[in-house]
Image (cartoon, rainbow, N blue to C red):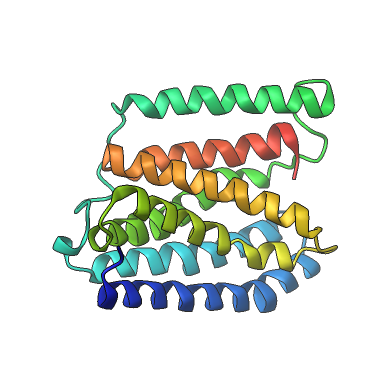
Length: 222
């Protein structure tokens, strides 16, 4: 059960962040994408992502008392966490099989551009994990009675914050496509959250998140 006062505060913070990101996506990212290409577009959109996501995430972590977090030092390194490597192996196999089923071959897709390495490998993972696991789940776990409830709530919120991107894509994807994407993102959000709580470190989730995004653009496309 969500403790009322702290829960309302956390959900209101999420609401403000969602609105902010929607405004940024509509009035900043879409014009950048329409008016620029290549490394210029990539550096500008990555700069916006780092400022809005990583900046806010680090600020919220810094201003929150450590006793209000489940994990006091979320950026501590824990690379001896065995489920990290099992998860990495599983997603690599999954992506290879998916690529073969969809394209009847395994290789780098024609749509891949080296500029994608910045956003889809170096930027998105660390930014999104900082906000959603480093702060939101880290704080949520202290005010929710069970770990499973905290994981499910943050996974749903993680999926919903991707809506602005889907709604500002042209042409807009079908409702079924958007729902399918949201379900996938929610499942991934649950997985990243589980990695964080079990390892007590953001780095396993950051690594898995980054590798997933990279394999999508390398092997699947999109």
